[in-house]
Amino acid sequence: MSKTPIRRAGIEDARTIAEIHVAAWRETYAQMMPAETLAGLDVDEWAARWRKSLAAGAGDPAWAVFLALDEEGAPAGFAKCERQTSEKMAPLGYEGEFSSIYLLRRMQRRGAGRVLMAAMAGHLLASGCKSASVWMFRDALHARRFYEALGATPTGVEGVWEIYGLVLPDVAYGWRDIRALAQS
Image 1 (cartoon, one colour):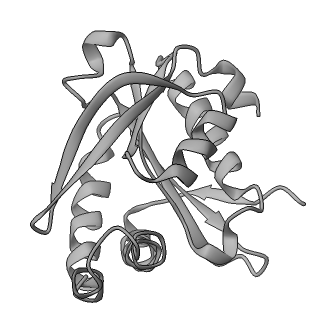
Image 2 (tube, rainbow, N blue to C red; image 1 turned 180 degrees about the horizontal axis):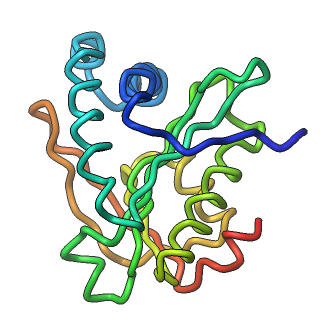
Image 3 (tube, rainbow, N blue to C red; image 1 turned 135 degrees about the horizontal axis):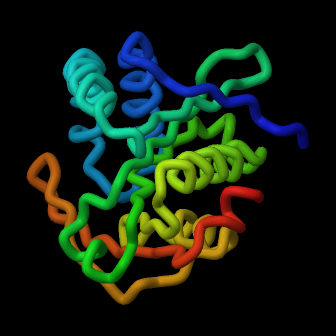
C-alpha cells in the first residue's frame, strides 16, 4: 500500500468537494438515512455551501481542508479541521476539531484516511492546537473503529445531529495529544 497523495484545497475546489461529499454520504449513510433523503442531496447547493465555508475559513490559520488523490491524481476524498467549535468539547480541553472526513468507497481501506488524519493533526499542531476531538454517528461502528485504531478514546460526550428532518445520535471521541497522530 503506497502513501496516498494529498493536497490542500482552495475555494476553486468547492464543487469537487461537494461532489465527493454527496457521493460519500450516499455510500456511507445508506443504512442510516432514508433513500429519498440521500437521493435529494443537491450538489449545486452543497458546492455553494463549500464555497462560502472555504472563503470564511481562510481567516483562521487552524482551518484547513485537504483532498486525498487517487492513482490518477483525481480527488477522491477530503477532510476538514479547525479550532474547536463544540460548546461541549471546548470546556474539556480539546483545542482542535476534526470536523469532516469523507472518502469514496473505492479509496477506503487503502490508508487514505490515515494520511488525511495525519495531515490534519500536523496542521492543527502547527496552528497551536495540541489536542482534538471528532464527532460521529453513534451507530457508525466502522467510524468508531477507525478512530480508535488511530488512538482516539470515547470522551463520554453524546449529542444528536439534526439534519434533513432526522435526529441522529452522535458521540465524540478525542485525542489529548495529537503528536503521535500527526506522525502516523
